[in-house]
Amino acid sequence: MPLLEPDEAEAEDGPIITSVRPDTAHVRAPRFLDLTGDFISAVLIIAGGVFAYGFVQIG
Image (cartoon, rainbow, N blue to C red; front, side, top):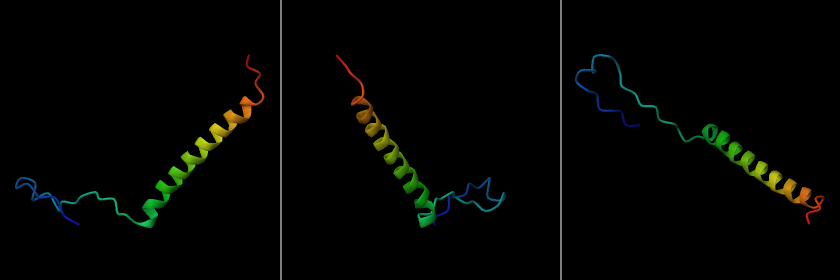
């Protein structure tokens, strides 16, 4: 993991670290669950609209 180049004025403050998000299964799982939840919500909203359309008399 590459580190940031330290400035000469800040070199004495301590180690310079970067916040890098690792690509592991524990990081990918919440993103997958979030995407799956969004997809299921979209399907339910569309299916509910189609189902409700059958009960509504327009015209």
